[in-house]
Image (tube, rainbow over all chains, first blue to last red; front, side, top):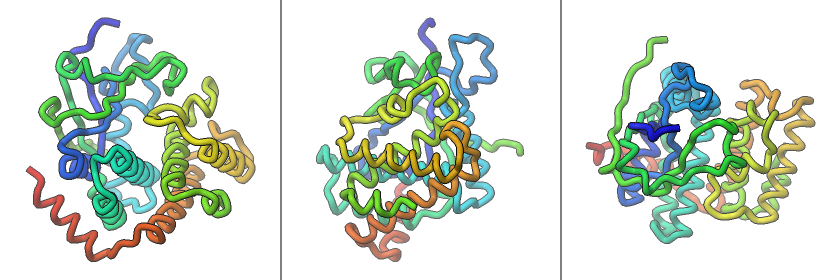
Length: 165
Length: 117
């Protein structure tokens, strides 16, 4: 596969704000070189639905719009934020008091705080930060997914858009 | 259904277990071609402890037994039920060990919102 121009990542407003406020504007993200795998014909670009930034965005959009308090996507995002806070506290990026604050925020958050945001970043700019997931560990053998542990805010754009349902 | 598994874990371990279970359930459709362990490793920054690995396996076994199907065949409603139960256990554990006031949470949330660009 040739180098992509852009990488995409779907996240929640809450996880975005927590990284901005507590993690020195550094964001831990999963990203992919394709926004919507259904629009790509090549088998090289296959992504499972759960990994497609569009699918993640769409699910979060619909569930937050419905105000679904028992949304599994939101529950998963909450656990991801708690796991992130624990990791950051272990790495001494934040204190125990700050971890407690993050936990409090997550528990007090409203459904709308989990609305989706799309991050878009130029591949060239973040290339050195990418952690390619080994084939054995990918969700799909043919998928192209990357992990970025600490993506500076200066390296990506954030957009929010409505989806007709 | 999972209380006894979580009661043997520290709070940190509980979060880790719940997080990996959530990831695994999100990726369940590709489990036909992948092992649970390979999915669990996805996104790990540190290798999980033996107790975390055992707890994950135990929870997966219970989910399979309760649902009467493989993890990869679970429907969305079942996933939602299992995931919410696990998340609730983690919340309870967190509140016990890292107590917070809901009023503080609202205030902190307001702070986050107001500091947004």
